[in-house]
Length: 119
Length: 119
DNA sequence: AATATCGCTATAAAATATGATGCGCAAGCC
DNA sequence: GGCTTGCGCATCATATTTTATAGCGATATT
Image (cartoon, rainbow over the protein chains, first blue to last red):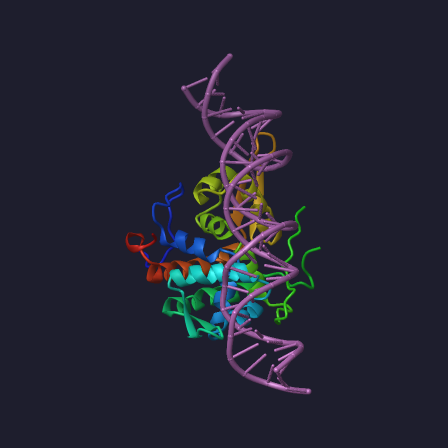
């Protein structure tokens, strides 16, 4: 039996497939950007917002909440009244670095550069 | 002809970052599912639709067109009038297997099981 | 001949993302 | 003291996506 081969039968066999689930999580808009930013260290809300570049607060808040529920990031409140928070990756979140790195390698190898790219 | 451009209207330094681009491509809904299905071999439109599970034809067609433009998949038309087509991964597409495998490993290691999962 | 399948497109509605604005409050500065 | 800035979001109206549903021409199956 191959140790890690991506396997799924052809016809809708999504009874429970971890990969399928994972893809559903990671494909949500901004999620991967958020994780990539947090791989460089914990950040506050607005800081994160600037780092991911262009995500509006509502969406960002929603993503962060969901990722927290999933145990991928953790939220730490440092002070209640001058609201100071920081978001960081949990162990599960850190593990996603492999995914980001795979994307990184792929992008450098196969992504058309803008200079010679599309019309 | 839908021309999709990523918004780089950020204060952040996303001048041109391949990873950022790649994430923007891969995070579109169904894209990773499509690629994962095609990793098992070429498929026709409806076949793919069933394999992906739940993507409607309009979205699927749009994704496929975009992925073709990006050089990730290739479309082969076998006969014009009883329309018979098949979609397959190009070399760039095949290379995404690494990404899928990374997601696969991560999901098995860190994804909460459904028995103890969501409300 | 009736029906099913194939690869898609058209249409409208539903879901989601977005931008703008604003809140309370601490800290910096003048 | 008064003024502004920045923080972490909530709210709301609007843009953008995604979805459901229906359907086409044409062969294949019953």
